[in-house]
Image (cartoon, rainbow, N blue to C red; front, side, top):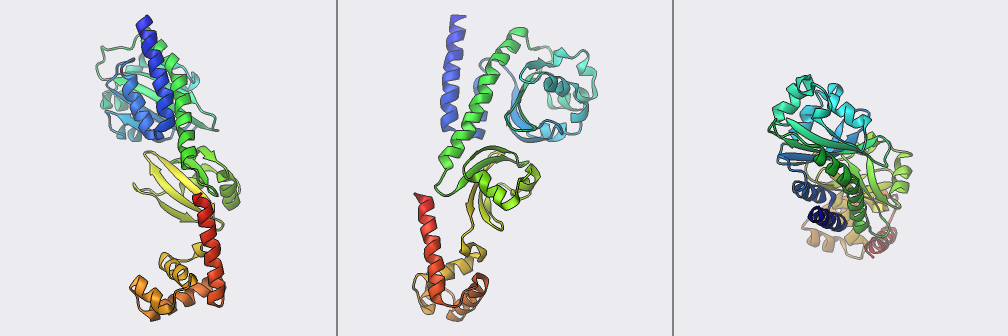
Length: 323
């Protein structure tokens, strides 16, 4: 028992240390690997989503396909195991807690198909309206049942695991903070898991009080990130595993320009001639003049002096953000 207490203490110390230095998705995967030393399993999942709709918006899988939860949506409404875990939030529950669960449609049509014949899982309440997270550890052999000692151990570890994930999210957002920008970590479904001022102020300035679908609608569906520009703010979007890191800032005047127009405006506004801009960007001087006509029209200005003022203001704001 002394050795077990020592191992658990070392695990918890490493858990909180890792949470401060690892991205949330990396932290989740590494923690699942370490949990295997305490509660052996064949594959595991750590994710989160909407409590009412049971929509899983993000999940980290260990040794199993992420399709497990994509397919689970077909049986989510009739899954008695999920019902039980939601009724007993923050408790560790087993398949064996439900009489005849292995005769149910949810088990036969889904869990058995993915070799989840035994499971211990905890659904954890989060300090975000309508959002819960979960950890599920599965065994493929129906005879390798989870015992009461393993349930108790899972029950003891989960509050620490959940708290450490929140710390990882907050540390990621804190590390990404830049002066003049607001930073937020959000789910695929648009739920804000963690943020640093003035993120919430800026998104409310754009949308009022945005609901999750509003944010979800601007997130890219592919693997990369990008930039989204609204009426009053610009969002830099970076993909972090199943999450998105959003950097929000007030739009500069030059943000209304297309990328090539911005290049022309910046070079010309900093003092270059038409010909110098053309040589720098490898385009014709006439193309530079055409771009400048569009730039003046979009910015509502009339001459190079006004453009120089706008470029100088944009440069000053950029330097402040980098400090």
